[in-house]
Image (tube, rainbow over all chains, first blue to last red; front, side, top):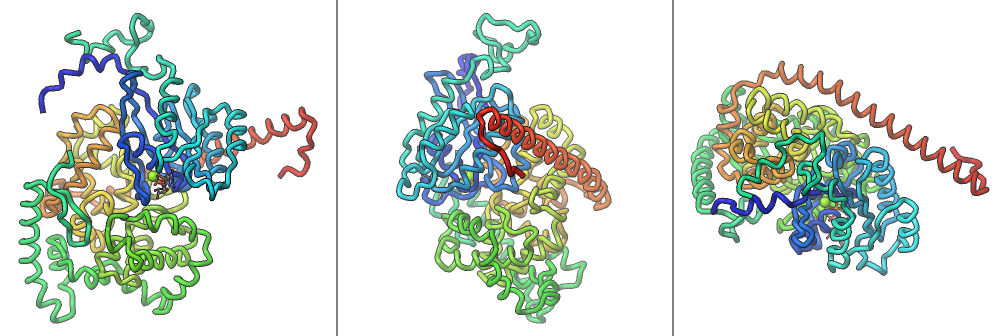
Amino acid sequence: MAADLSAPALAQQQTAKLVLLGEQAAGKSSLVLRYVKGQFFDYQASTVGAAFLTKTIPELNIKFEIWDTAGQERYHSLAPMYYRGAAAAIIVYDITSTDSFNRAKAWVRELQRQGSPNMIMALAGNKADLESARAVATEEAQAYANEAGLFFLETSAKTAANVNELFAEIARKLPKAEAAPRQPQGGIVLDSAPAQAPKKSACCA
Amino acid sequence: MASGETGVFDLYGFELTVTPQDKADRYVCAQYAQRREAKWEPFVKAQALPDARRLKRFVRKGVPPVLRGWVWWHTSGAAAFRERYGHGHYASMVAAGEERPCVRQIDLDLPRTFPRNAWVSSPDGVAALRRVLLAYCAHNPGVGYCQGMNFLAALLLLAVEKDDERCFWLLVALLEGILYPKTYAPNLDGCHVEMRVLGQLLATKAPKLSRHLNSIGCEASMFATDWFLVLFATTLPSETAARVWDCLFLEGPKVVFRVGVALLEMHAPLLMRKDNAGEVLKALKDACARVHNRDALMAAAFQGVGSFPMARIRELRARHQREVDDMLAARAAAKRKGSLRSAISQAQAMRASGTSGGGAA
Ligand SMILES: Nc1nc2c(ncn2[C@@H]2O[C@H](COP(=O)(O)OP(=O)(O)OP(=O)(O)O)[C@@H](O)[C@H]2O)c(=O)[nH]1
Ligand SMILES: [Mg+2]
């Protein structure tokens, strides 16, 4: 490997921590895998603990740091460690399961209570390709999302429908300052910010 | 990254991607295993395990894969558990499991357990795994089914020649005899305790790495959940994990701390270069999945990391158990308060809109 000469350019990049939450088998890992690697498996191994993936959107100069968590209720006690400090969350349910939709609502309540105050929250009704087995009506979920102030899309990790759109919309909604708390942008200098913050990678700028 | 030759299958039917170095390591380990197998012969003939002192030494050098079913059965305490509960217990628990609410969760996870392992995903494999998990659910309803048990039971099945009853009793021995209590409990209480203890042990064994991880906000809980819940079955190559289990069944959960610290120390130079917790998790996962030199890992775990007095572990556990209890209690209280608040605001909204909120619990 050659030395990483691209470091100075990356200094301008915003990093956004994003966490996926939702019921066991709702499709969290599948959505991330589809988005980051363009892959899908009919049988995706269940997640124990958490997985971490990254993806950069060059047009918006945003790098997502994605935490994919385990869905079973008893892993709930680990979740705060992952959503703490997150700029965005995707709460996933499976449109063929009302239980998973109720679980999604519980996650929304928890994030509204415990998450960062400006967290962008998206609700994803996944497995939209399984229309014949649908148990949660689009209108019902949309109405709930409006009431709770969430961004809502029905997705399919299998067909890739709305997957890029979901992440892109989150990227657009991210407030710039929120997305890169470690690196004050352009001319904005916060008086409380330590002066050495951008030093690390700005050596040759 | 994961470049190398594919199409190589390990002893338990997992496909590997191996570099020339991995291949060389696997070859050397296999040679050693063959030599060790000869040493066990007299004991197999006599149908009796070596005496306690020799057993520990023998087991640390690796139980021959064909003998795992037999050796684990006795070293883990599984045999004693079956005597205690009786021989019909397993069959009756399998039947009772069908009535348990966790059937649904188990059925969701069956096809999601090592989906690329030919036997585990075959009808026979799925049926055997289902029986074990249902039986455990019925046998211990307080714990029921915890995600992770699926991987644990599947690798156990593979290692004990697919004998599901034997696998069930090994699972019982692990959860009820060997591992820290409540590791799989509804809040994973015990797992939280163990992960914190690991963090403390790391601070004494590898202070520089520990300071680095702390400075980037990377707690042991972020990378060690599967270590304690799946006992490396999804972390290490299966032959390496089984080698860890040889010792775990005989010597207990101290082995998980030893191996955990050894894995962190082995990969310390890599981890020191990572500047956020996610990158640590990813790098460590990738690195652990390629630990094919099981002899080197065991040497690091048992000689490299120094002594691990059980008294110290007990003391750390007691301290962290109190902290975890407090944390879980505080969260439960916050949740109750939160739902009370949302119930009140909901009631107020209903009153304002003129609907009756009567009959609310
Ligand atoms: N038909 C269909 N199946 C899907 C879709 N997304 C996921 N699945 C399947 O649903 C199962 C569960 O998906 P995962 O992505 O593993 O679910 P998860 O939310 O990560 O589950 P946990 O890790 O257990 O919390 C897998 O077998 C997937 O193949 C989808 O959009 N359509
Ligand atoms: Mg998952």
